[in-house]
Length: 302
Image 1 (cartoon, rainbow, N blue to C red):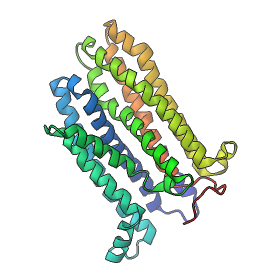
Image 2: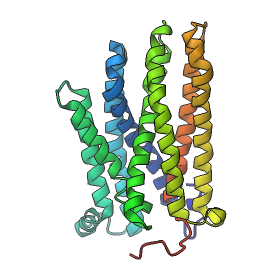
Image 3: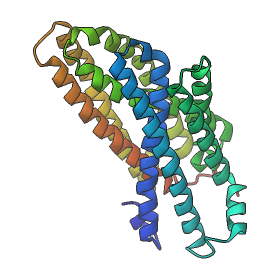
Image 4: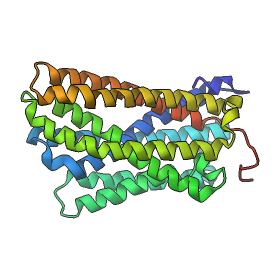
């Protein structure tokens, strides 16, 4: 929203669109992450935690569907400047475009994620397919379709978002686990998740760096466009969140292992703060989509 108002002919609708975009990033990518966590770790949760995970996943799916539809409506309003919003020909054209492709991929993916709240034998497979479709929707439009090399950027986007979703979607259930009255019972799960998270973070940093390189080309002139400032904001928020995650691993988890009084509550408080900076990173990502990197000849002509 901030960067939108620094653009020529900015409108309040543009700013609202950025806020809605950030919220549906959180809901949809969070839903994928909750589902991925459920595939790997739901059987390690206590009964009430597993039930809460299913409820939270279903809530994230419903929020993602609603916010995705709202974002689509706002996108059409922006594209048409509010004129002919009810014209079926306008909607038909939009739904045949990349915007429509991304919307249907995202919708199908979110619906399939709901399989994880059932007791079907194939629910894990359906959920994995749903997560892939939902994450692929982010490669179906946006910068990944505007800049070369398109295929490499699209693949990096999906891989980057897959590991990001695993990280951020794991935070709510880890928060619940940290609050267990018997903190020792949470240690094994947290440690096993932490080992998987280390690889996820490495992949996230590598893919994020490659995406930044492909999209900006000239890192020495990254601040020549507002996109670079939004990217810097996102990077700072992510680094703070990762710093908190590292502190959790090095300080709070060992304290929990030793059975220190209040260790679980301190870990939970740190996870909450980590979630705040993750939300700020998502907002920065929403701002990044509203502006473009400098074109050094790598933007694909329409």
